[in-house]
Length: 470
Image 1 (tube, one colour):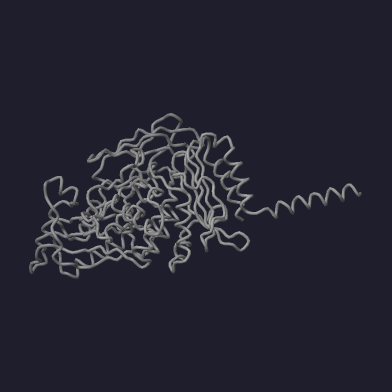
Image 2 (tube, rainbow, N blue to C red):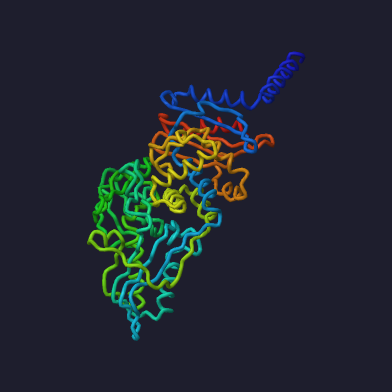
């Protein structure tokens, strides 16, 4: 009996010692285990934990190692946007026409949708941005102006953000897919659409059934192959620049229930004009010429006319609402649109490069070395982004004192019972966010680059490190 009692006392003593270990020691042990794991044999790892209120360092391991961030870069983009644009910032899309309206209701001129960078126009995520709602606003504006016929064109003018829609550093495999949709001065339905198909026996070709919505101005060629159950969705869309034929390549597992992929719109401004013209046609308002966009006009050596008479202004949701879905669903398009907007509102040409420069200068003025924020985009999709965990955690900590912080905090998803943004690209997994440890508010950034093996396994191991913050 005495032996049992001694064992029990020893166990309680050891348990008590472990519980009493300083957080720094527990994080060091957990991080060391991760670093020694076979999945990290050739990997680069970093972790920084700060006191969210004071900025005091709680723990660091390789804090100045520049690593690929994947989508945790979105936290930096959105915090910068809150600082520079304000939580109530709204985009303003102008809708109007050039030319004159005759007594019989004929517009001798063009109807123009003048984009201003709103990433939500036509999006299904908000009540007032749905495609049908936006089209109704436009139709109502035309009818109130007395327009019954258009002797001209419907033009989607996306010129405000220039002609380079894809950030430098993105890879070819991503570009035709929804998450690789390029920026546009006039985005539409988040610059994406769905392609539906049938699956069949293993190694047989997969046929396309239809698109949602229908895309009559594009051609589709499936080179997809049915794959065994459990192999997942490895289907990719490819659209050569300036081409009209989209190719589907890769494999798609038999047991996948969705049986579709989401592809990127090659010219969102054109699609917006096309959908409006189609709507007007169904309502009996005829348009004499084909729809156009800045891209299609430029290819013909033409320019878009100016809006002479503005009929209505379509406001986007507020920035706080945009950021909510941006971080919740990790929407690359939203982040890239914000980066260009940051440049625009700073008085620079709204390009990705200028957005990066404005962002770096903003944080440089607050003590952050731009070399620790070495980025080429706003979403983290580029494998060339390099940021240190110390910089990312420091930027998270800076947000804590701002009046808009509750809006930013609520935008972060919950993983592992922690409020944090995740990031994942090829052999890269990252997390950044906030947690409370025995009443102490902490912020953190953890990155693992070049791990081997499955992402599920490395995620569980990274969570074991973050569990020490609970």
